[in-house]
Image 1 (cartoon, rainbow, N blue to C red):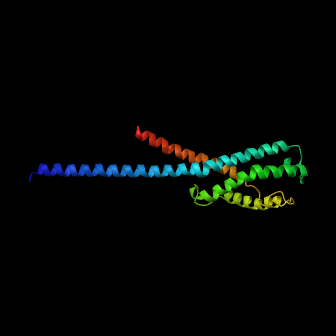
Image 2: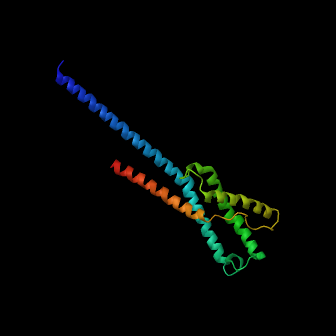
Image 3: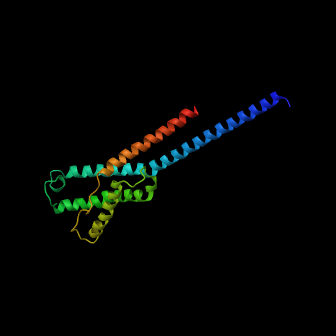
Length: 187
């Protein structure tokens, strides 16, 4: 057998194998990148996007509520006991503005926790869930015309607002990196 034919055949087979291996590894890398982008898109659309929007809306509404009540006593910290008028306003805002938002956030946390960035549930999310469940008892009392309680026994964890904003920004940046990398490679 001709040695040049053998060498040519070996080189051809080797180059075909290297080409196949390079294609396989590239496809594997692209597949992993696509899977990561799909997860990030789910994190944004199902967890961090709604969490950020709702906590921001709640925080903005709370600021508006407080600013309307500033100088009127309880909500600006000048008095320890709210007046009946303040309590009536509070019950209205709590039952129609804050609690519906809180319940949506609560449901998102419970149903989408598999999309968390962290491996452990953040403390602010756990505290928020406890706050909401404790407030449900207060609202039930209000339904029964018992207004002896007006606040949850567990305070609203203010750090959830910052957590949701920072997490949203982090995930959004990760998404941009993956999209930019995909666009650059496809050009």
